[in-house]
Length: 110
Length: 118
Image 1: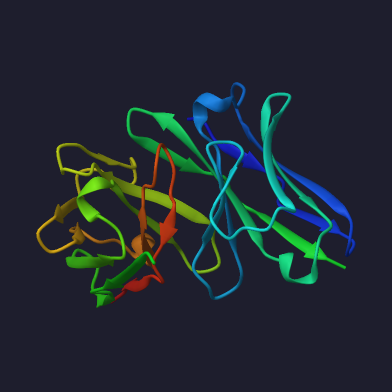
Image 2 (image 1 turned 90 degrees about the vertical axis):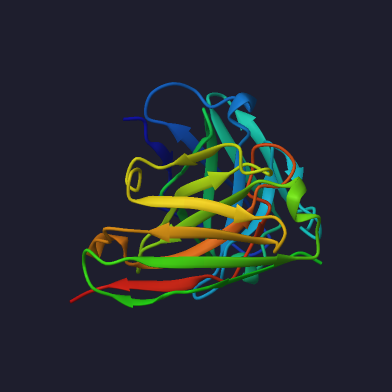
């Protein structure tokens, strides 16, 4: 059973840059998995930031960007702000109408 | 703007059934597929099911296959999730999400809580 992998936690200083990754327990993530990145703050519904690898959703600040780095999808936050402290989830399209979420990364800004 | 409002959550005994609804507005509903995603207390997100824009195809996570059924009524701009044979591990907040353009989850509702407990 393939698992989508994410770092459980990450820390970044205000104004700093952080890259979160999304991989597969078996194989490489490519654009064919149409990676999507979602942000969720405690008690709130998720919000989609990035879809189809690197397309920002409407209203998402330019400091969020998506890419493929090596064999993983990546979410980079450039110039992190305090209100970026959230859980970040990637979700991959596995084919045949099936999607799979990663376990999420808890980002701390301090 | 896109608005998705889930309803139908509540407390149900193990083995019971529940039907969730998600009312959509702010976009042409019959142009988009729709997802259900759930989140158990203190846990991450889990994709549950998807229905194509015209209802012609439905797909499910292995954890719910054979117990849950996704459907939609395009005349009422509503997507449903019929949940049967519920188990304590189905306890979660259930979100509906618009599929968006391509293979993604674009917009989300606020969720409805389902608790399976005796």
